[in-house]
Image (cartoon, rainbow over all chains, first blue to last red; front, side, top):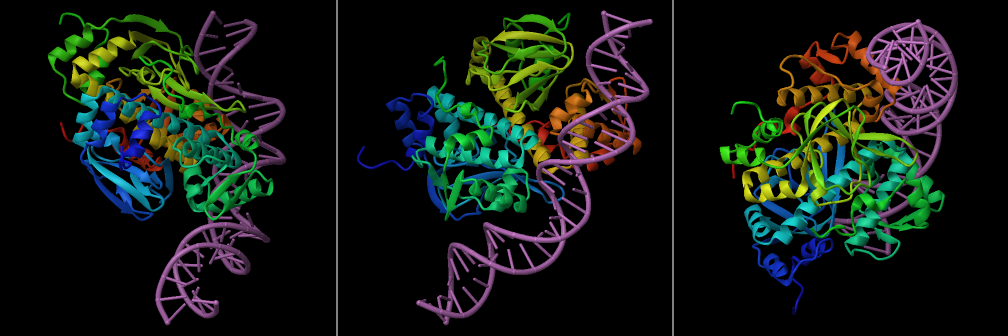
Length: 246
Length: 246
DNA sequence: CGTAACTTTGATTAGTATCAAAAATGGTGG
DNA sequence: CCACCATTTTTGATACTAATCAAAGTTACG
C-alpha cells in the first residue's frame, strides 16, 4: 500500500456502489494494462471500429457522440475518472458511435478478455461492472427526457447539475466549483441546441447569478435554484449503492 | 415438441442473435413463470417500484416512459414479442421510470432469481440477455440523436422505420404493412413533439404517398424514400448477430 | 346511438435556428 | 513581453419550426 496503484480510480469507482473485498482489489490491480496520455479530441473508439481493448479514464474527460446524415452531431454521454469506456464492445463488437477525449486525459487500456475473465472469477466485480452499464442506461434515459421535453434553459441547467454531481461522486471536486471542460459548441452538441442559443442561455444563467464561469471552472451560485431551473432530481444517477445487496 | 411453449417468443428473440442449444431451450422452457393478459395502459413497472419479477412480452406492445416536473411525458423505448422488460431491475432494484402496455398484451412473469440462476448455469443465455440489454442501449442512443438533432418529419419517419424493422425481426409481420399501435398523442410523447404537430407531420407523409394508415395498420408506400426521410440506418439495431462468436 | 377518445383544422405565438460579424480569449513563437 | 493567430464567446437581425389555444370533425366503442 506504499504508492497508489494507477488503476485506483477504476477501483474507487467500482467500489463506490458495491462493496469489494481485498481479493477483488488485488485482482483488479494485477490485471494487464497499458498506460498512456491523450490530448483533447483524440478518438478512443471510432464508429465502425472493432475493438479488443477497454479504455479506462484515469484523469480528464471523454464523450460519446454520433453524427446524423446532415452532419449534425449529438453527444450521448460524458465520462470521467474511473469509468470504463467500451465495456459494451465485448458483446457488440462493432461500435455504433464514437468516443473522444474532451480534454487531455490519462488512460489505461485493458484487454477485453482480461476484464471478462476477471468478472467471471470475481463476481462482485462483475456485478459492479454491470451495475455501471445499467446506470449509464439510466443516464441515457434522463438525457432523452431533456432532449425531448425540456427547454433550453432547463437542458443547460440540468447538464450542469449532472456534471457537478458526477464530479462530486468521483471525488474530483468537493465544493460548488468544478471543472467545466466544455465549449459552448460542445454544450450545444450535448443538449441538442445551437451554439448561439447556448451562449444566450448561459449568459442568462450568469446574469441571474445562478452560475459563474472562470477559465473552465464553473461555480454554482445557488445549487437549489439551479436544480430547480434544470428539473434535476439526482435519483437517476443511482449514486447511493444498490438498496438490496442480493 | 407437440405444442408450442408459451415462452417460445422469448426463446426466439434470444436465439435470433446468438445460437442457443437444445439444453438452453430446455432450461428456458422449464423456468417457473406465470402467464397473464393485460389491457392496454396497464402498468408493468411504476417509477419507484421495487420489483422481484421480470415481465416478458408474448404478444402486444409496451413502452417505457418518464415524466418531467412540469408534467411532460417522454417515452423512452418500445417493447414487443419476446422482449424482457425489466432485466435491469435485478441490479438496480428501484425503477427510475415506468413501463406500461400500449395494447392488450399476453405476458409471462418470471422471478428475477430464476433468470439470474439460469443465466449463470447457461452462459449462452446469459450472453444473449446482456446482448439484449446492450442493443437496447444502442437504440436509446439513436433516440437521443433523433430527439436532439432531427426535424419533426425525420423523427416520425425514423420511428416508423424502427418499429417496422423491429416487427419484421420479431416475425410479427413480413410485408410493408405492420401494426401501428400508437395514437398521435403517443407518437408525440415518443418523438418529443406535440400531438398537433405530429398530426401535421404524419398527414404530410400520407399526402406524399410515403405511408398510409388504416385502422392501426401502417403501410409503407416507399421504404427507400421513408428511410431517407428519416435518416434511418438500421445498423444501430444490431439485428445480424455478433460478428465474433467469442 | 350516445359518448369518449382521437384526429384534423385554423390562428397566433414562443422558442430556437440561422446568418453574419464583432469582440474577447488563449496560446505561440519571436 | 508583445504581436499574431486560431478558437471561442458575444451580439444583432431575421426566419422558421414547432408550440399553444381553441374548436370542429371523425372514429371506435359500449
